[in-house]
Amino acid sequence: MTVYAVGDIQGCVRELEIALDRVRFDAAKDRLWCVGDLVNRGPASLEVLRLLASLGDACTAVLGNHDLLLLAFAARDACPKDPGLARVLRAHDAHERLEWLRHRPFMHSDADLGWMMVHAGLHPEWTIAEAMGRAAALQALLQGSRWREFAQILVDEEPAERQPACAPMKRAVFNAAVFTRTRYCTADGRFNWKVRSGQSKRKGDAPWYAHQRLTWRVPERRLVFGHWAAQGLVLDQPHVLGLDSGCVWGGALTMAELLPGGEYRLAARVESPGYRSVSH
Image (cartoon, rainbow, N blue to C red; front, side, top):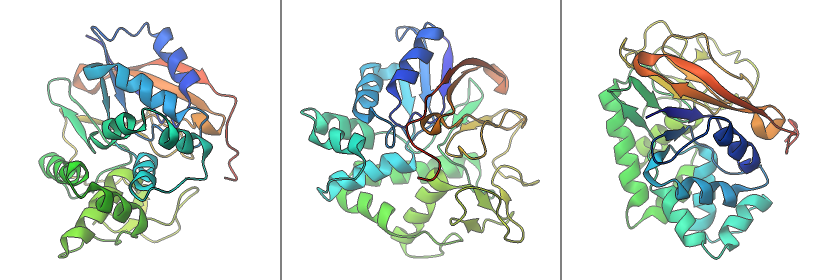
């Protein structure tokens, strides 16, 4: 069995199909890990969801912030401006596509392989077990009977800079933001949600994975993530692997083979014509 991880797809189904073809992906024996942001901005969000769902158990995808946005639009029965998202909601199989999406996890871990996956990042003071527990709690809420209310809250409410001490829903909003929106934070877990590109100028801020002390960092596990197109690929860190190479912005879709013990090799890079300008 070969395990491949792919960066942010964001509706770029052509590039995904080419990447799968280049590695000769076989759903009967291979596995595909998707780092989230499957939809939005690209031309074919609906086709991406259909393709990934068709892979069955061969595909493991975690939720990204754009995936949560689609679920929030569905929850409030509103029409998004993005034509790709609107097509998903109008499709004859919209219910099946949305049900598949909202049953994706926020975090995935394979101890035998030595890899784990989130969309954006982790809190520097969380253990792996704690992170998995928080992800499972979020997943339960999104799969529960009140998922529509929860999906809207996740998108509408601004998360706190630090982990809230009380108020369960505020904690849930914060935890979801850590998994799906993280870029910069301080070593003690003060998150900067305002900086989306460029460098943070706030004192103590660093990329979430760059702090010297990270509780979740252990020799036997490496983390693959996406989300940060402006930063590009992160290939030189022994504990993380960043695969967002800005496909929807005119970069490329990057696929890596995940090898045991935290090793990897770049397996495919599919250049994109660009579907959105950086000004968006």
